[in-house]
Length: 67
Image 1 (cartoon, rainbow, N blue to C red):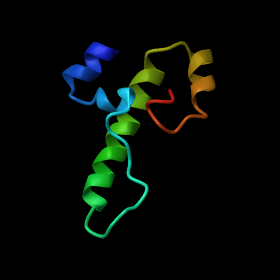
Image 2: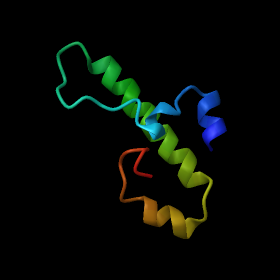
Image 3: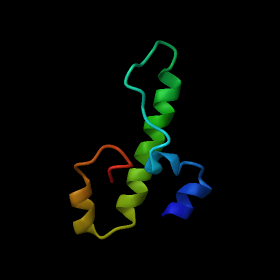
């Protein structure tokens, strides 16, 4: 998974380099949307690559780094 995410240039979501800022300013919505979309992609890819029983345990997490 690490190599796959590095190839997609989004490993930083798992390593903690990229985080969604807590203070959202006007005009930053496009950046926030991109961060949230990439976070959702990673979680989906991880869930699709593990057994169903493991995926159900991971469903409680909302941030790729936590998963």
